[in-house]
Length: 107
Length: 116
Image (cartoon, rainbow over all chains, first blue to last red; front, side, top):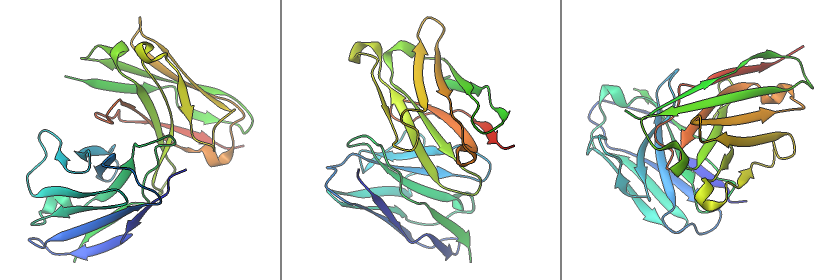
């Protein structure tokens, strides 16, 4: 099974900050990676797929990069509505494992 | 609008069974694989399994934690995907989400509580 290691597990940041979350796969997954945002009490929402393709309707301050085993999600200028938990997920092969999540909190 | 609605959750005793349903609308249901993902209280996301579309044989894949206990099926004539859960354990307590191939969108989830 492919393990997904996300870091950090939590971070504190201010409005306007640039934030980067990383995700490492235990083996190469090409670009078969997605990022999700989950607000409290809500289902996850797809932000990015194929490692770097922005889902329709997602603000352009979100971006993704990487391939193989190392990936990152960047929020260029943190907004109040971005305080949430973020997850990566590989869909290279079953089981389609998620990272442990990164909680982004207000500093 | 593409929409997914889960139902069937509730309180169940350990060892018992429960069937969840996921009803889709706003898209050609039979064209898509359907996945189930769960989230234990205060924890992260755990992929449960998926069922491929009929065009890809309607075959299934499962997480090791549920394999042999959970079964995913689908009725494309009714636009419903099912998650049949048997031999439930307290560790299966979670909100269960269904999601379409591509993991967009997700339903609102249904809570399953396994407790004596």
